[in-house]
Length: 439
Image (cartoon, rainbow, N blue to C red; front, side, top):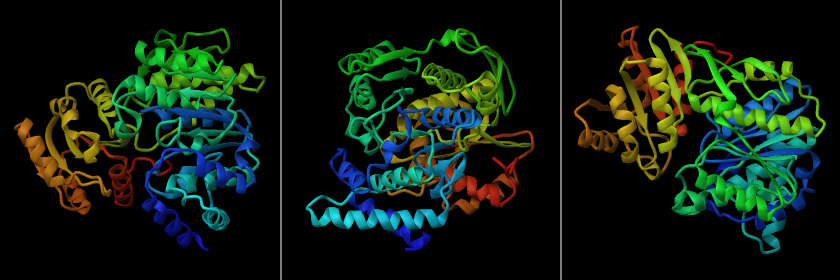
């Protein structure tokens, strides 16, 4: 099996759906020798902010001298983004070889009467095996869906569990209330372990506390008033960490915009404090370097400044709310030209009150996903709620001439489904619209 064949095999397993439960992944990892037991794991669940928080923790651990794996989903532009070690994506040869091995184990499972693993279970198993081969010290492991029955929760022990911002999403799987969703996310908490909670509503925290108490796990809280913004511009913001009993951080720079990213950084720092308390060597210098170097494409990412072009994968109501706040904070009173695309099951109509007041012109796009709302249908939906000029684009190639005719003093935003944001980022990069090709 070569690289292309391995991707074809992985993606062909989508037909087995998204089944919550640990029986299949448990069997598959057992056949692989339980590679996930070979390293220390920081397990990250939540509705929003998982990727940003995971990347921050990863980059600080790496800058502290530890070989660190990162497992995230979904990928933005290339599949290999999902499985990284010290910021290097899994190489093609390793992916092909390990996928062949995983397929051999799946054949054994099928002969023994097990169901075929889902696509996410297959990718998770590949990642675990690759990280074992890389002899990593830590794995920052992002949950795919939920927590309790997510394939990543096959891990038996975690150094720290992290619960980021929780809001309504995937309710068909996780339940129709925030308490039920919080319960599912808190399912990653292990017996006698530690859990860090992003600052959020009391009813959500109460549910996580309840699960932690049943697991005899210690809860570590984050306080909003422990972080203070110093300054910011269109690409960075600086803050002071006011909790000084472990780290002394009077000024830290992050390459993320928006108030919510300050709280993601706060959550990452609280997690790093716990890891340091466990005896690992994390210094103020490694924190500042790690956060200064950390970037995460497609999360209020400024690609260009004349005109301003931003990409943001705000794909649900919570993400769109964060996007709206970031626009108001960073673009002041300037109305934006919006390129917008969402999946139907993310309830596009519910996000319109947050996004329409920001816009003076809207172009709609169709994300490359079976669950996508078409650009035409999305445009019609917007017209029901606003008299803003809306134009549906039939294909992504129409974006380039549209951007070329926009004045240099305009503010342009691409927001919505990560499937759309990834394709748009690739398109803009290939047409010279990216400000820094290293990002």
